[in-house]
Image (cartoon, rainbow, N blue to C red):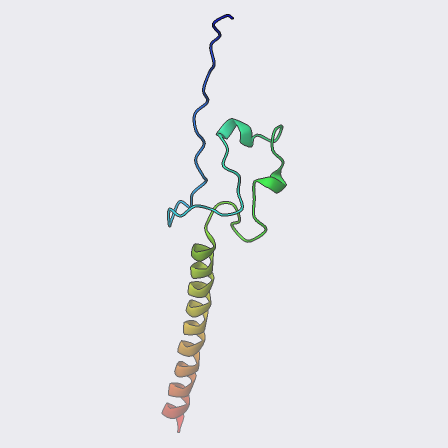
Length: 90
C-alpha cells in the first residue's frame, strides 16, 4: 500500500565488431558494469579463437586469407626473380 520508486536499468546492447559492425555471437548482452571480473568470469566474455570476443569470425577469416595471399605473392616474386636470373645467365 505504499509508493516505491522502481528504477529501470538501461537496456544492454549486444557487443559488436568494430570493423564489420555485426553482432558478436557467443557473448552475453550485458551492461559494462556487469562485465567486470567480479560479476562475470573471463570464460564467459570471450570466444576461443584469435581475436575472439573482439572481432567477428568473418573479419578474422579475411585477415588470415589476406596474410596467406601476401606470403604467397612474396614467394612467387622470389621464384620469378630466380628464373629471370637463370635465363639471363643462359
